[in-house]
Structures are given as C-alpha cells and as structure tokens.
Image (cartoon, rainbow, N blue to C red; front, side, top):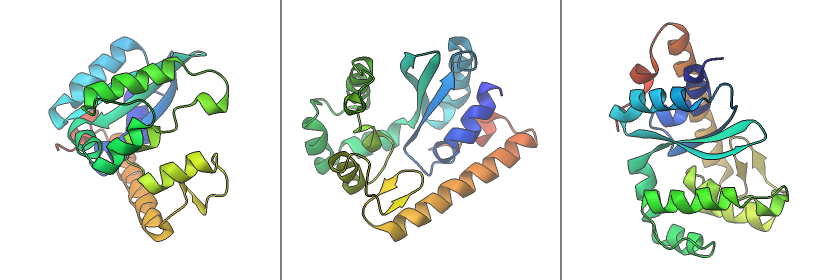
Amino acid sequence: MPIEECLVRYAAPTLAACKVANLISLPCCIAKPKELKQCQSCLSHSGIEIQLLQERDGRRLIYVYRRSALGKVLQESEIQKFLSDFGYVDFSPEAALAELSRRFSEMTDAPASFPHEIGIFLGYPLADVRAFIVHRGKDARLTGDWKVYDNEEEALQTFSLYASCREKLSALFRQGHSLSELSVCG
C-alpha cells in the first residue's frame, strides 16, 4: 500500500480537521524518508505536519498533526500542569514534540516506559489519559479509538465522526482524489 493511502486510511480525522493528530506505525519500506517528505509537502498548505517520532524494529512511528490545533491543546492550563509532571517545560508545539520524541527514544520494551501522555498529543480527553495511566490501560468503560473512562456518550459520537471521516476520505481517495485535495485547510 502506498504511503499516501496509509495516510488517508489512518489519519483521515486529522486530514478532515476533526482531530488534532494521528499516530501511525508503518513498515520502513512504506514510510521512506523521501516519500514522507513528499507527503509533508503535499499537506503543508493545510497546516498539517508529519514528524517521525521513532524508528524501531523495522517500523517508523509517524505523528501526523495539525500545528494550530496542537498549539491550542498545549496552551490549556490543565494540560500544561499534567504534562509538566512528565518533564515538559516548554509548551510550544516544537518543544513539546521534541520532548515527546526524546521520551520515545528512551523507551524500552517495558510497557511502563511508553510515553502514555501521547494521548494528549492525539487530542484525547485529559480525564481518559489520566485514567488510562492510573488503571494501566485496564478497566475502561469503552474501547474504540482510545480507551474511555469518562463521558462514554461523547466518546461514541467522536468515534462515529472519526469512522465517517475514514470512510469518506478513503472512498474519495479510491476515486482518484489526491492527498492534497483531501486535506482540509485549517
């Protein structure tokens, strides 16, 4: 599957401006630096950026995000307070992503070393990110695009919105629309 199709399939909510970001794990043979750079160029008009967070075991962890949306999330006082507990001190998108990348680079195979604060960077509700960490990913009330511990009804609506984005953008891509055409400016 070409990288463009992977981005449409796995980052559709971000492309459609319904979500802050998506995290995609792809084989290195698909997520080649040259192709990622070309995709970044295609998406730059819409405020979407692509960042490599980690390369490990023949896979690349790609963060596809809307810079302006991430900036808004990172300016929320409760988010800053939460992230500061993990060592974040600068809440500009560049600095926060640099710290997140650093945390990924220090990750070991132990599940506890995974930077679960990534949920904030993906736009998940703070209450769910906190609960996921406290409960170690168990005892969720609902599982979908993320594990839900609070406000199930709102989460179900969001899951439905994300599914709709994936279906619509994938169909348009199959009809010949380009990655650039499918990314909403914002």
